[in-house]
Length: 206
Ligand SMILES: [Zn+2]
Image (cartoon, rainbow, N blue to C red):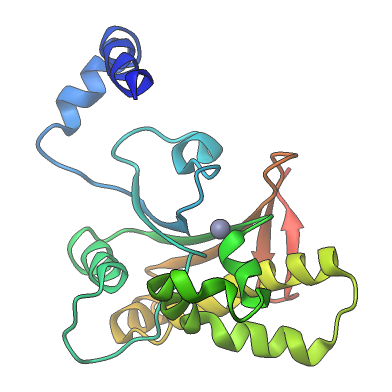
């Protein structure tokens, strides 16, 4: 635990001072350009991989970077509320869905049925990506690594589609006021692949 407290002290004497003017500037107002939707996985650090500073990314993180399909009813949904706020109030220019390699959430689709019994909320949450599992199952991929990568990548594409079920996102996207991006991040190499929606492939950013 001490490392958390030591971290604050170090932040105050190093990074904060380095960006003091920026923190003063953004202290009372945020104008992020991008809504970043990523996995809760501890290995994903949105600002690090995009080299962005505080104030630039409005971030939503949940298990397996899922976007629930739009529903009109008002509910206690953290992800949906944050999407609504980012688009309607903050007017971000981009939405970036970032999936990653070795995603426990995506791979848990293939867990033995009994494994998830002690994590009922996680299990329920992942039902939102059931269509991903169904599509991958229909491909009958034998190689486990290949299946994992394809699951993680298809999951990104599906969540990009889910974004377009939100009427206010669809409208802005159609009017070219909003970009929707899908990235696949490989943790061990640092490589990031951007989804080309015309060619339907992930292309390495370089
Ligand atoms: Zn993940």
